[in-house]
Length: 404
Ligand code: ADP
Image (cartoon, rainbow, N blue to C red; front, side, top):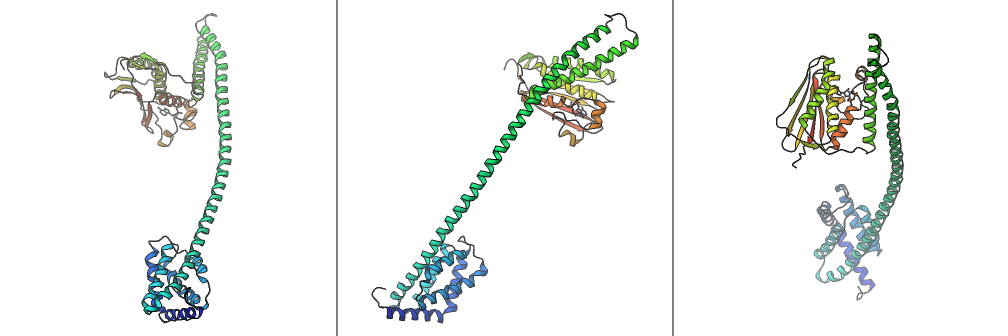
């Protein structure tokens, strides 16, 4: 532009504007076509219905620039960016304008015309980039603000949760200590009461009438039930406070199962229930584990089987599974447990339902202790049951033998 004076420039720009006016429809179509092409390949917020409007504006702004000599390119670039056009679309619009003049001008007009058009395009790009940068900065600012707000909220929440967790842990520890102490305190006098009842039973203080014998027997039976509850409470608080230590000792699995069976026979007999026993030959003669705790697991299941069965039978089964595991299974033909209740009977202090617990007694700890002991041994316990038909509890434990 430096080598042509302003009158010539005016003339040239008027000529260009005339060309645009004269071929408006053609130019509009070309704009629309390239916009359509870039619309789906280039990330943009422009909807197809906006395309004709953009084409018309493109032409009007170009004419304004040519006739009024306004530096409208920068503003127009900002406007295109705000409309949501991507950079590919903006560059394509520029190419269409250039191509338009290349086809509609005489050869000698082309070079000066392109000077004017390129100056205009540069302004547009400048405006577009300015706006893009500002948009990106604003977006970064917005994201930073939002992140800061989220972080400060989450920090407050984490602190609150930590404080609550701390309180819960303290309360839980206190509860465990309290239960352990109370159980211990109650167990001691209960032990001496039982001792005295036993002495009475054995006529140490002289012979008792049948009625007195019956009463002392009932004192003993109820005291044993209490001792059982205190033992369960102690076990539970010990497990909860992480004080459970499993021992490694060599024992005979078959003998252990036989022992539990014979210990529970009297209980089954009281209800005239047969207590079947099936020990598979494939059980190894010796294994390593916490004999007392495995006994406790099986006893709990067998006692429950007898407790919740009125007619039919209770069966104990033990066998080896593969080379690494063994199974203890207790099946009864008792009252059964609904699917819904099966979901929580292994939780501490949970019982299937209140009417059942009132009728059969217990505090709902037996199965929780079974589950926690089995888990500590890396085993599993599960229950299959149907109301009115009975239940099967299956414990699977890892098998460690002396040879291993
Ligand atoms: P509880 O001291 O109440 O027997 P458990 O933890 O041993 O506590 O059992 C939890 C609940 O699961 C029991 O209250 C009972 O409702 C149900 N349950 C356990 N074993 C059986 C079974 N063999 N048959 C039917 N219900 C059972």
